[in-house]
Structures are given as C-alpha cells and as structure tokens.
Amino acid sequence: MNILVFVESAEGKIKKNSLEAVAFAHTMGGSVTALALGNVESAELESLGKYGAKKVLHAADAKLNQGLIQAYATVIAKAFQDENSDVLVLADSSLGTPVGARVAAKLGASLASNVVELPDTAAGFKVKRSIYTGKAFAQVELTKPKKVIGIKKNAAEVKEVGSNVSVTPYQVSLSDADFSTKITSSEKATGDVLLPEANIVVSGGRGMKGPEHWSGIEELAKTLGAATGCSKPVSDMGWRPHHEHVGQTGVKVAPQLYIAIGISGAIQHLAGVNSSKCIVVINKDADAPFFKAADYGIVGDAFDILPKLNEAIKAAK
Amino acid sequence: MKILVCISHVPDTTSKINFIDNNTKFDTNGVQFIIGPYDDYALARAVELKENSGATITVINVGLVDTEPTIRKALAIGADDAIRVNAEPTDSFFVATQIAEQAKAGGYDLILMGRESIDYNSGAVHGIVGELLGIPSISPVMKLDIEGSTAKLAREIEGGKEYLEVNLPFVAGCQEPIAEWKIPNMRGIMSARTKPLKVVEPSTVDSGVKLQKFELPPAKGSVKMIAADNVQELVNLLKNEAKVL
Image (cartoon, rainbow over all chains, first blue to last red; front, side, top):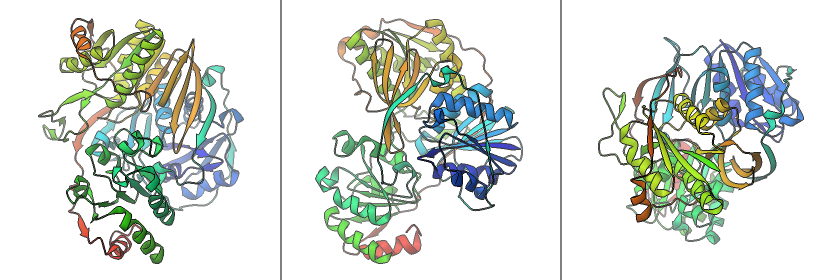
C-alpha cells in the first residue's frame, strides 16, 4: 500500500497534527511518502523520516507559502497520481479538511474525515469516524480503489521509528485558476499555545464575571503550558476573542487535560470538549451539569481556587 | 445576485443520540430537527446581503419529505424559493453531487452553506461542490462582504484568521460570527407557506462510502469530587492517577 501524507506547516515548522498523520500512516503499514508545500525548513522536512516517512517530497514554489485550498488540492492530487498512491492521509484542520474534500473529488476517491483510529483492513477498508460532534461514531467502508482520510487529533501517537531522510524537490505546473483566491493578510495569535492543538486547555465561562478577571486563567495556563479557551456566551459578549470559543459551533478540542472554570456545561459546550482525555470542572454551583461529564470536580469559588491551584501545580513541577 | 444556500436538516444540538435497527439507523424518536446551525449562519448572511444590496435566495436541501418543515423555516427566514432533492443524505460526495447539479442548472453567483453539518461533521460538501463546478471553495468563513463582482472574506485558521479576496462565483462554508441567526417573524412564516418548493429526484452516485454501523462512546465513569480547600489532592490525582501532568 502506498500512502501519501499531506504535511502542514506554519512559519517553516511542521505542525504537530501532521506528525500524527505521518505516524498514523506509518502504523497503517506500507510505504509512506510525505508531501510538504511552500516554505518549510529542510531540517524539519528531513526529520519526517524519524516519524515514519520513507520519502519526503517538497513543493517549494513560493506561491505555495500561503495555504490556498485550490492550489494545495491541485499539488496533492498530482503527487498522489505521480506516486501511485492508494491512500492520502491528512490531519483534519481548517486547511486539511477543505483541501482533502477537493482532492477526493479530483481523484474520484472515497473520502472520510474525523477518523479516530487505524483502518480495519482485514476485509475491505473500514474506518471509524467521529460523528454528532463527538457524541457517536460511525464505521464506514471505503470501497473505491483510491481513498482520502482525514484524521482527528490524537488518532495516532507520534513516536520516533526511523531516521532522517533526504528531501526530494517536487514541481507541479500550476495555472492561474489555482490562485483565483488571494490571501491579502492574516492575523495570528503569536507566542501562545494554539487552542486546537493544545495538550492542556484552561477554559473560563460566565462564572468568571468579566474579562478583567481572566488573568487567573491566563496564569494557570502559563504554568501548565496550556491554551486558553472559553464558553460561547463569553466570546459572544466579547470578553474573549472568537477563536477561543470551545463548543458545538466553535473549536472542538481534544487535549489530555481540560480544566473548565465557571462553565456550567451546556450540552453545546460539552460537544466541543467530549474528546478530552481528562476533564476537571471548577464551579460554585454543585448542580452544574458539567460535573456529570467531569473526571474531577471542585465546588467552590474560582477566584479563591485558581491562585491556589496555580501555586500547587508550580510546586509539583 | 443569485444566492444558493444549502441547508442540512439535523437533530437539535441538545438531542440525545441513539441508534436503532442493530445500530444502523439514527433514532429520531423524540428528536427535534433544525436547520444546521452553521447553515443557519450562512442563510442569515445571505438574507443580510439581500437586504443590503438586493439578491434572490434559493435554499436547497437533500432530504426526504420529512425535511420540508425545516425548508419552510428557511423560507420564513427570508429565502425566496427552495429545492428539495428527494433522497437520504448519506454522505458528502452524494450530497455535493446533487447540489452541484442543481447549482449548474440555476447559475448562481454565490453558494453558501455551513462549514459542516452537525450530524456527520465531514466538512467536505463545500469543497466537493467547488471542485465539481470548477470554482473556488473557501471554508471556514467568518466574514463575507460583496463589492461588485469581488468578495472579501475572513477565514478562521488555528489561532487566528486570514483575509481573502475572490471573484464570484464561489462556494463558502460559513460559521459564526458571519451573521446573527435570524428568527422568522409572523409575516415570514405566512409567506413561506406559498413560496415555491420544487422537489427533484436525485441522480445516481457511487460515493464509495458505505455505512457499516454506528456506535456510542463508552459511558463516562462518575466524577471524583475534591474539597475546595484541598487543591493539592487534585494536583496529586492529575499527576498520579490521570497521569496528565
């Protein structure tokens, strides 16, 4: 089986969820080729060998420095054909998911996104995907010879399994139509841990009583190396930026640890956190529904508990 | 300007998810169906564009006859007419193919939908429709303005956003805060009853995706409560029991 992995990068570095995609492909078995686009540091590209890629292709065209859905789909579909690939694996993300859809349509491939575990290839090719925003799973069989699968965060564990590989330049002729969408500028939260990729998330809700009280959450997040999140009412009221909204219609997170402070736990919020490994809920209302979905809970005043928790974690490190 | 808004008919976000027939069918018993929340944002933005600069809005849904109340709600919110492709929406490629065919026939300037449906969460229909029509597709879009034949958009990326420009026609998968959800008023509800709703039969598509079975996640164990004056115990548990620190 030939597997092509689309590897996403940001500021020259390979994204962690793409390393998971390489690890996922490696564990599937077969021959793994990783494809990176635009500006990526060569040491980063070579290191993909360590995580299971046998071959690394790099389409270094400067026009691909920005993540354009159409242009990326063209390059990936072409590489899929040139490499006689059977399966494309990519990490589901704001870029990966829409790109994967276009690639599948170009190739006439079976498509499944939000895949949570390795395919069952004992008879046919079956994948398990997360549906109903994490409330259920579906097992689907992909019946076409070509397949595109998007994997959900934490579907694979990143491990070193090999050594560096040399990078093969890859060129594709692109047309103007591939660049009909233009990115004019971008805004990025710099220096912080990105919420969708974070291993630990500290989230606040209306119980925080106002944006001026967020320093407690930010300090705890800093101690933990965590990203900060919030509930929908908090982002709706403009206390926190929209990209921190965790929930059904916001970011779905899948961290090792999710700490919810002053969030009651409406079902729409739970839909965004139900893939977390461990959930801690701190709320002054003992009847908050979030406790039912938590692993650990504390009933109490957030303003009182936050600094103490921060100190206790600092001491434990 | 002609806008096509694609809507899904999905269980209300508070629904309890269960399956019947040996875990092969969604249990609709006691479930309230709504316009997909992301699609609802797309529709709300379409209605705003119509109010600001004039447009006609067609809504399309791939679904069986039971989706018609959901379609009528979209008409009540402000769409002018509707198309229902009479088929079960089994997977992204199937749904996208039906939409692309109707879109081709209708010649739309703008095709809007949600970034994903909240039942299957594939987030693929906009991309496939764009590819089938040979036009750009952009998702997830959180801001959309039209100036003549050009659109200015903002797309959410991990931890930030990106601003884009594209010429019409194109497909956008939408999310908040592109517009505020609209609640239909009485006049809208009355007029929706008589707005045209065309039913068309689907074309045959082999998506290469076959559902085997559904399953529910294992039940969550009960919560361990810790006293508010003993945060040290929480830290110990996180470190030694949950092993997440």
